[in-house]
Amino acid sequence: MLATTLAGVLFACKKSSDNNSTAPMSDADAATQSDDQTRVSNESNAAFDDVTTAMTEQATVTGSSEVSAPSGRFGVATMGVDTVKSSICDAVVTIDTSSATRTLTINYTGKGCGFNRKRTGTVTVSIPAGIHWRDKGAQVTVTFNLTITRVTDSKSIKLTGSHLYTNVTGGNIASLTPSSQPIIHTVTSDNMVITFDNGTQRTWHVARQRTYTNLNGFAVALSGIHTDGATSGISEWGTNRFGNNFTSVINQPLTVQAGCGWQLTSGQFTLINAAGSTSITFGLDASGNATGCPVAGSTYYFKLAYTNNQNKTYTFILPY
Image 1 (cartoon, rainbow, N blue to C red):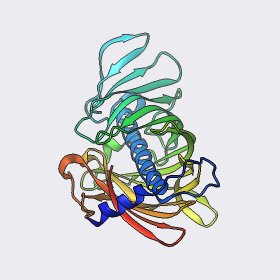
Image 2 (tube, helix red, strand yellow; image 1 turned 45 degrees about the vertical axis):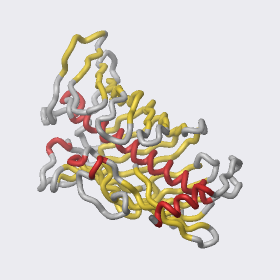
Image 3 (cartoon, rainbow, N blue to C red; image 1 turned 120 degrees about the horizontal axis):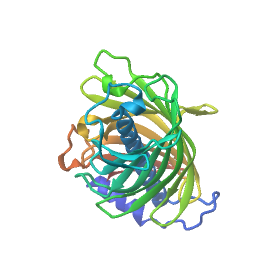
Image 4 (cartoon, helix red, strand yellow; image 1 turned 180 degrees about the vertical axis):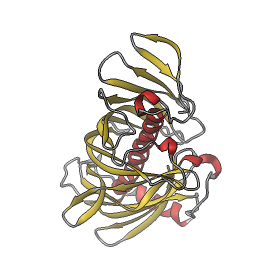
């Protein structure tokens, strides 16, 4: 297919091994960064889906009896730490109430759950005394120590660092109905560290909005909330694994649906870096066509249209 041929052209190009931020990027470097950006964005957002689920399922965290099943605890508490029931497929969730700052920890087990990834490590939510997640303006700190391995090629990325998670509008997503007003959360960070499969580490900035609705089932639409000069809608920025600066702008909300395993089913963003500009469209099948939910084989694809600084355009398709 044309997409496969062009992908071969991109990855056959000579890669730059210079990590200097002023070094030119090859076309293959740009393709690799696009894959990195997609994985980091998707997997960090998936982790925040789990954070929202874990908090929503615990009345002591939300501050309301309006929780989605399963809720409660089981087992024996040890030093104030309980294992709690959770609907997260590949994790065990614990809550620690032994200090003024409560902690909710998602411990990932490496179970694949039928998706194209396996996750290990932890995501920890720190909840200050007196804070209830359903309240307008409530804020918690979310700390990553999470490794994600893609099943198809065994490549891993590791996410570490802390984020500020804010319930802007207030409300509990468990009580969302088709007639409810959307619930808006924001995620901001200046120290999300990514360790790539080649051992390179980079620190990224994050500024995202997550808008929850319940029309034909639960969905969350992701958008960028940072502005730099004339550029708005920025969701992430920093340096890539090659040391080049980049900016990621969400052009069409990235929509994640609960009915499709909380996978990214549509949306588009533009990646701007030293090599040129890349537009990435999500929610496609292996041929590059928009697909429904659930997708066959539980694997979605994105279409990448990359224009380099010499105005040469490449288009190819990759799974996520």
